[in-house]
Length: 236
Image 1 (tube, one colour):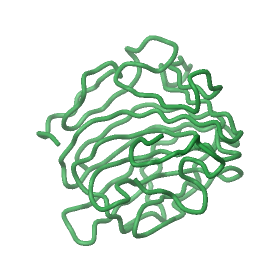
Image 2 (cartoon, helix red, strand yellow; image 1 turned 120 degrees about the vertical axis):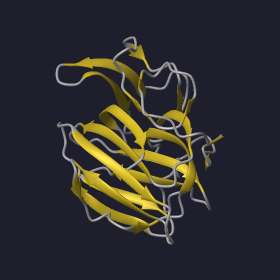
Image 3 (cartoon, rainbow, N blue to C red; image 1 turned 30 degrees about the vertical axis):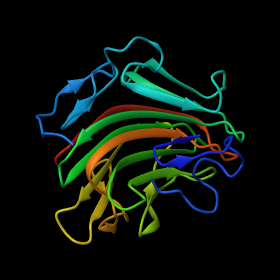
Image 4 (cartoon, rainbow, N blue to C red; image 1 turned 90 degrees about the horizontal axis):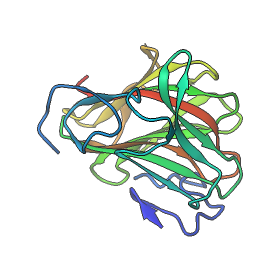
């Protein structure tokens, strides 16, 4: 099985992405608009939330890939007392269970800002991906591994960079700001508006940018619960 440049053979214990190495995988610019997930394919900048979505399994413009149609990992729209409707990804932390929820778009900005609100439960291990073009790998992945709260950025050629702790059971606002009007291309990761150790990190990523996703990887221990809201792709 192959999607977004990731190959999974029966999603074995090697996992989708997190074994010895990560398999690191255009349109006119428009004014940002607030969108529900049932929108048509997006071109340009946007901000989306889940307020107009029906409660239940994630659908609309999103695609969900999992280890089996009846797999126990789920992606659902739920109501919360503090954030309105949000995306809730529940991952089963047993190999080879996995789930990838993907939202596709096209944006040709050279410098770009991907922001998202994240609320992982205690012990949750997950991956947030911002993908575009350029030499492989064509993405920046932010991950929180089992047993850790450290948010780690992964791309090439920089490899793995510890950014900062991403707290459990509270909402955090995370931003990936990519700078491609310079050589080398770099990116910064901010948490709640504060700079992290992931500042000026070298990446091959470039425009056009094509998707975001949230992943429960198939490796043992990856999973748990993470809430996602207020996703945007705009100029910095």
